[in-house]
Length: 124
Image 1 (cartoon, one colour):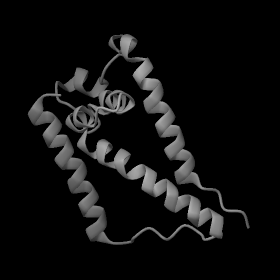
Image 2 (tube, rainbow, N blue to C red; image 1 turned 180 degrees about the vertical axis):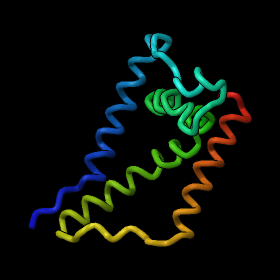
Image 3 (cartoon, rainbow, N blue to C red; image 1 turned 60 degrees about the horizontal axis):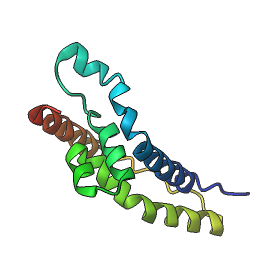
Image 4 (cartoon, rainbow, N blue to C red; image 1 turned 90 degrees about the horizontal axis):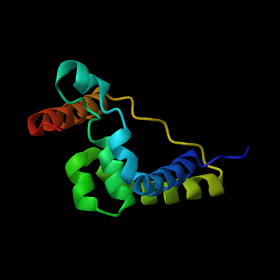
């Protein structure tokens, strides 16, 4: 059975998207902005991701981390994950099962809520 390296393909698309975002910087003012923030006045948990992606396209990691810390950390880990996925696909190994743990799910929710609180506190 042939294994497809989906994570590596996603990493390639993410790198291409960040590179493209750097070229679209001059027209970024034309983007509509966050609908949640426009309706409620508060930043959403993903506010700053577009600006983070544009900063990553210019290789400005500090600015990217400012706009969305989780996305910047994931972008830094993406090459390692892509290599792991290519190795996994080459060997024909299946993807490992996701952890079925309440603690892991709670940790993800806490990270999401923490980023949201940070974005709201900073007024992004």
